Amino acid sequence: MWGGRFAQGPSAVMREINASIPFDKLLWRQDIRASQVHARMLADRGIISAADAEAIHDGLDTIADEYERDGVPEDWDLEDIHMTVESRLTELIGPAAGRLHTARSRNDQVATDFRMWVREASDAAIAGLDALRAALVRRAGEHADSVMPGFTHLQTAQPVTLGHHLLAYFEMTGRDQSRFVDALDRADECPLGSAALAGTGFPIDRHQTARELDFFEPTRNSLDAVSDRDFALDYLMAASQCALHLSRLAEEMIIWASQPFGFVRMPDTLSTGSSIMPQKKNPDAAELVRGHAGRIVGCTTALMVTMKGLPLAYSKDMQDDKPPVFEAAALLELCLAAMTGMVAECTFDTDRMREAAERGYATATDLADWLVREADIPFREAHHITGAAVKLAEQRQVALDRLPLEDLQAIDGRIDERVFAALSVDASVASRASYGGTAPEQVRQRVAEAREALGLED
Ligand code: ARG
Image 1 (cartoon, rainbow, N blue to C red):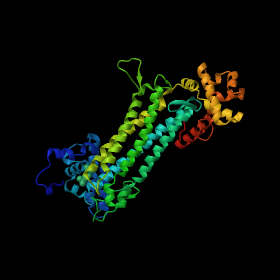
Image 2: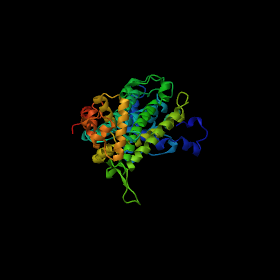
Image 3: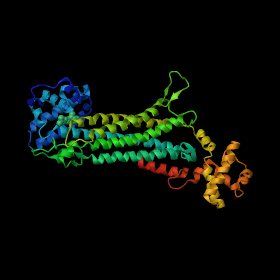
Image 4: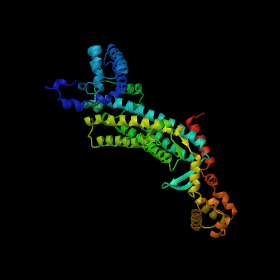
């Protein structure tokens, strides 16, 4: 393609280091579509003949059929997907194929193809998040009243409802979705027609190609357009944040599935056994989601470091933009599917959760609050009195609400029998009815709103 100036061909190492076809063949659909739109515009503007544009269009259709059927051939001499397609087009339609590259360069071509690909990856992530969020809301609705220990420092803190806990992830994944939406919005400009770096002398219509490729508008600066990979980084950063959230959920599932916790049983379909310990059921899918988050963050770091310090405009370093994005997108899709299945199909052991909440003196704050409210004791003093009650309950190995009234009164005479109404875990969660609190009534409201937002019917 550029042999005119060269006396010798590339060495074996040059061919190998230069070839991006092993990975950028994933862009074939975008490349063919963008070329068809480009050829049509060239004909509309009288830059190439209608007959050539039609031959190019039909030839590209044939290539699409071939790739669909047989895959994309990998010839290192053709470097990348752009030259692979063009070379096949030349075989199919002859010299007219050589007119396709008028008024463009591989620099604006790859920027356009890749944007289109990343846009689809964002759409896929948004759809995957929709499925996960629907599963979270359904399970939250089932468990609006199920009491479990809420933790800080992974120490039992206060009772919460399982529904409330699941809805925390609904919020996190909602922000993740909005980051992908935001990334899509910023990526909605078409680089095609920026040519190598400076624009072109041909009378092209960039608005037409932008429109026909479903972009909102053409990019406004050709130098920026061919050297900008913000859209890929925006995607990767959104994917990283999302992966972190999935990893936290996975980590909780792993902890909850462990025998000392026993809060959840993983679905068989997302677990594995051990080859030597027959009793084991391992949460491998969750562990891999946790692990993959590391790889996705690694992909983001890889492209950030690739881009830092590159002068304008295009440099070949930028060919390395694709593997991390492709890798992250494939991993994220798997992670979303795995977590959706896990949330939808796991079995929560709500008896175990309740027992754990009762065992951990999770209602100690409720006792202190009761003393403040009903006996007008300053909170710091109430905290102290409650500490003594917890110590006593610990010695007797009973829950706070199982301590006899006399014993509580021996600690502080201002306590009376009404306190027991506040000390059960159910009373505790029901009392936390502030907006966004854990009370079943609040959870049910949030679930109703979430169902409405997602358009869930069943
Ligand atoms: N395969 C190249 C890439 O992905 C296409 C652009 C090549 N441009 C060039 N000036 N050599 O970056």
